Amino acid sequence: MDFFDVLKGRRSIRKYKNEAIDRQTLETIVEAGKYGASARAEYPWRFIIVDDHARLKELADIIGNNGRFIAEAAAAIVIVSADAKYYLEDCSAAAQNIINAAYAMGIGTCWVAGDKKDYVPHILKFVNAPAGYKLICTIACGIPDEKPVKTKPENGKVIFLDRM
Image 1 (cartoon, helix red, strand yellow):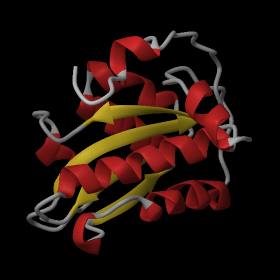
Image 2 (cartoon, rainbow, N blue to C red):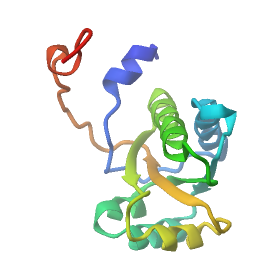
Image 3 (cartoon, rainbow, N blue to C red):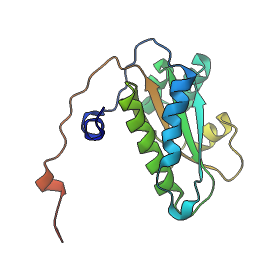
Image 4 (cartoon, rainbow, N blue to C red):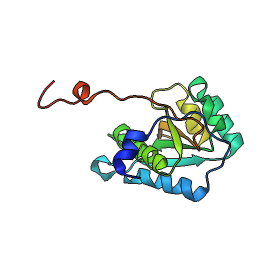
């Protein structure tokens, strides 16, 4: 798939077919995360793949309403970070790589917020993250069972030359 087709075609998917994703595919998708930009080459991210159905349901229960669909996903990728000055920027770049790689491989994803949510300590405990680690996000993954159509803003509304 062409790079710009990935960028233009990817959408958040919250409905998945009842199909598994093999471990090798999941690892390939997650590997894309490590190629994200990282300030000062710190690479603070850690990626935890959850693909056990009972654990996915537990994860969905921890997150609550905004992540209930995780229970029906084939997998979830929990991104946590060691303490670093630019942890949020670095890990967000990694997450975007993961989401785009998944789409390129026919896997639907949905980014579920983490950093500022009240469930952060519960998820950190759920994945056994060491003390001091921060939750960035959880990415639900599965074979899409929906095809959302959303329009993006026109260039003239978001792109400016020299100043707004």
